Image (tube, rainbow, N blue to C red):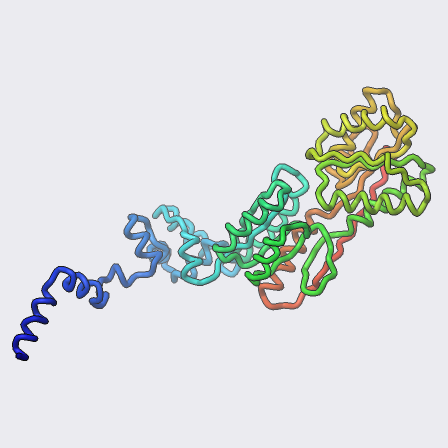
Length: 374
C-alpha cells in the first residue's frame, strides 16, 4: 500500500504543472538575477551601468553618483573624470530606479501658474541656483492658473516621492490639500504670506502693496482713482482689495472705476482696457494696473489718444518689469522681490529637509518705485 502511494506521488510530481511549480520555487542562483534592478535593466537593454562608469573613472559607485548629480562635496577634478567616463560610455542615469532603490528621490517639485509669465522666470532661476549645489533636481509643473490642473500635477508627481514641493500661493482644491497633507512632504508657499501654524511661506503682502499705491496717488492730489486688472488670480484680487480699502478710508471709492477682465495680462489688453476706461469715465485722474504689461499698454494708448501722463492721468503698475524703467514716461511701479522669493523659499525648504527649524513665514516686503508716470 505504501509502495503504491509513493508511486502515485512520483507520477503527480512528473506532471507538467508540478514540473512548472518546481521550477518556479527553485532558489535564484543566476548572477544576472542577483543584480540590482538598475544593473539588471541596464544590462538587459544593453545600456552602460553606473558601476561601469565608476570603474572607468576609478571611483566608488557612490562617488560617481554624487559627481553626476553635481553634489558640491565632490572635487571638480574628480567630478570631471566621472563625467568624462559617463560620456565615453554613453551612460544615462535612471532616476526612477534610483528612487525605487532608496525609497526617496533627489528632486523637488515647483508648481507655478504659468511658464509664459516672465514673473516666474526669476524665482525659478534662483531655485535652481540653490538646489544645484546639493545635487537636487528641480521638476517644474505649469498648471495654467487652473486649480484642477494643479491637482492633476500633484497626483502625477507624488508617486515619484519628491523630497519637497514649492507651491505658488494658497488657492487650490480641497483634493490637492488632502493629497499634500497625506503625503507629509515638506511644502513652502511662495509669493504670499500665511501666519497659520505649520504653514511655511515666503513672499510679501499683496494687500499692503495695493494700499501703498492708493496712498501714493492720494498724496498726489488724485481723487478719481481706478483699478484695472486682468487674469484675476487670487494675488491680483488681493492687490485690488488693498487699493479699495485705502480709497474707502479716504472716502473716494467708486465701484464703477474697477475694470476687471478675465483674460491674461498683456500690453495689447492694457491698450484696450485703458481706452475703454477713459471713454466711460473721462474724469479718471489716476489708475492702478495689476501688472506692468497692462500699464505699459496704457502708456502706448495714451500717446495715441494724446492723453498726457501724468498731467491728465497718473499711471502706476505692479511688478516693476525691466522695461518699465525705460518707457516714455518712465512707469511708476511696485517692485516685487521675485528672485529673493525663489532663493529664500528654496533655502527654507532645504532647512526643513535637514531638520533645522526655520521661520514659518518670511516677509520680504516690496518697494514702490515712483517715476515720471505718477
